[in-house]
Amino acid sequence: MLVLALATGPALGDDVRRNVFDDPFVQLTSAIPPSVCPVPAGPQLTEAEARAQAHGRIERGTSCFQSGRCRLPNAYLYDKEIMPRVQKAIAADGRFAATTSVWALGQRRWIWLQGCVRSAGDAAALEALVKQLDDVEAVINELQVVPGGPAAAASH
Image 1 (cartoon, one colour):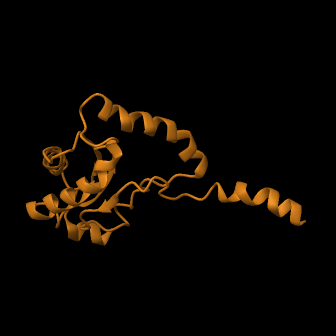
Image 2 (image 1 turned 180 degrees about the vertical axis):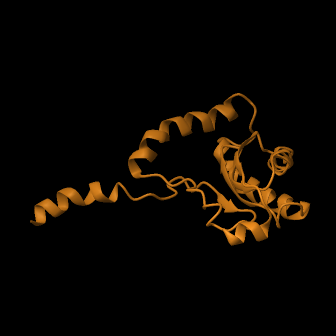
């Protein structure tokens, strides 16, 4: 029995999802309830998925520096600097706090915007705001438009 438990132990642990690469993933706004706008999964990977992605991440991270587009030796090193600026810019703008629930994921100077907005205009404005921040190379807009106001969302 003990041999069987030891043999299957690591395989079971391999299914555990966690932020293996410590990619910044933060909630920026929270006006739309989770019942209407579920929390995105974020950068949660199993150990097997992380192993499969490791080589590509190394290659993408260092090619930025090798090509002269990055001052730091790896593009992923920027993410923890960029994310507080994303948070600050969205909070300072003030347009989105009452009508959106948005999360941001940072990987290699790219920012993924995930969650829900009330209009396509809000999605475009968020994308444009984040795109203009220093060191942001790209913004991937994965925001979903959920019509209705905050009161309507709360009643669903």
